[in-house]
Length: 115
Image (cartoon, rainbow, N blue to C red; front, top):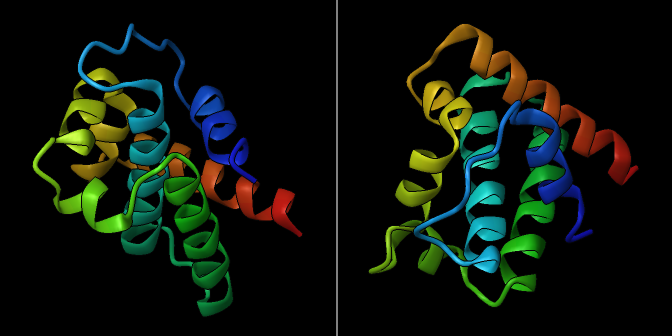
């Protein structure tokens, strides 16, 4: 299950710059959190889809050695650093239609793989 979110991140990003601020584990946790937060606000998911994606997200975050609180609210800006390195997600957080569609398609693909 840990591989679903990083795989989606690879599929979503057309070019992935070198990660300079986060470790690989921090990026894996951050991408899971970012996809979930964008999907929750912008992808019109059903309650069931939201629950499945939340479960996958928590599993990935914890599988990389963090808690949700550490990733989202912690001292280190994991999400901010991740967004700087991955513009498609940054654009989606700013409601860019193409970026939102890309992230939502990725989130739905992750849900389809989980079934």
